[in-house]
Image (cartoon, rainbow, N blue to C red; front, side):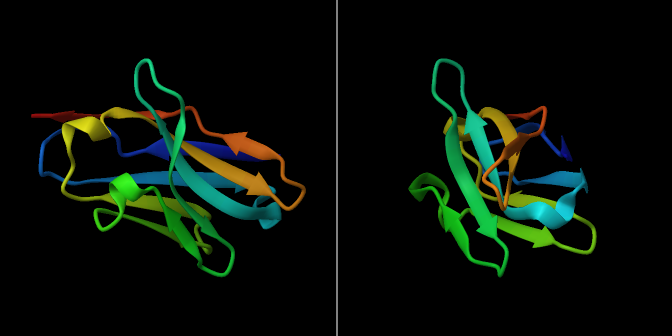
Length: 116
């Protein structure tokens, strides 16, 4: 089992920055993939950024060059640095961890609100 706890959301003006953190605990040795997803009201949950063991990353086109995902293996934490935030980035952001057996774990979500 893996437990995920997100933090770092909040209210920010357009053009501002936030850093989200996701602390993983439990059987973290089994995690092969960690990612951030978001869900805006009335929309489907979508991938924002992901990082796999070894460091390869993947980003949604809408956040490329603005967001950066990183992982601290020693702390069991994944981060999402979000710069140049836009109102359309407003959503609940969820941390995801996927095990070697493709089992998905989710955090409780953290609200990010960007005002214009």
